[in-house]
Amino acid sequence: MSRKKITVVGAGNVGSAAAQIAAQQNLGDIVLIDIVKGLAEGKALDIAQMSGVYPFSGQVVGTTNWSQTTDSDIVIITSGVPRKPGMSRDDLLATNAKIVKSVVEQIVRYSPQSHIIVICNPLDAMVYVAGKVSSFPKNRVMGMAGVLDSARFAYFISQELKVNVSDVAGILLGGHGDDMVPLPRYTSVAGIPLPELMDSAAIQRLVDRTRNGGIEIVNLLGYSAYYAPAAGAVWMAEAILRDKKTVLSCCAWCDKQYRVGGAYVGVPVILGADGVEKIIELKLTAEEQQMLDASVGRVKTLVKKVDEMI
Image (cartoon, rainbow, N blue to C red; front, side):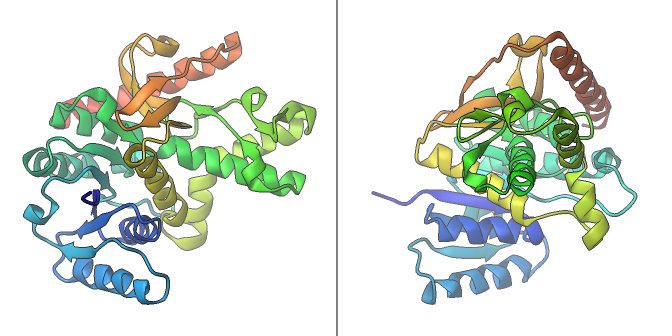
């Protein structure tokens, strides 16, 4: 049986980390592509040589030539301008919309049956660009952010409670931004609801830190996070390639669900061989629904701007 093929677009910090993790997870053959000559080739060769220490079976190649990505099963888009201190995710809108549009046109040409996972910001709007330009079925176009936000929330909870992070399961809704909607009452530690383990003030403190998790790292490093975002995208790719039916939060197309009315936003889904196979609808309180409506409204505002650009 032939190995699966994963293309990672962009050989910067996020892309090279994603290629490395995907290789070490034995997901298949990895193609790392970038417009800068030598960048993807050099990083791919370095990753490939890791197999002599920590063996994996897939091939890892770098290229500037899109023809080498032909018939990819998964394409992870990391290319775009990263955030710097003082910038919001929305500040990247115009530049990254053009980049994503050009990338997706190549994906349609060379891998028309692929699933697309978008990482670059502003996430929800860039997923919309990928969906519109590709015209792929909506279950095959998605964004990574919910996995990242959930991972951050889970990590902060584990540190607060001094428990194993693998015991923490969290759910977030809405756009990938300051108005994301963590749901503490649907968050649990080894099955125990979070409000049973932590008071409301502590929960709110961790919610606020999760919302600001990206800029906290930007302010420390001077540029965007990359290890955790890359890991989130590869986890999604693994769920699809191995048909794992994994329940996770990601940016997916919603119409009637959660009263979204047609937008790519963060929701809990089942991810398997058909991509986003099901959106899980939770019963929200009036306050939670109001927060989600506000977050969706902000996503739609960005989408209107994007429509004028592409």
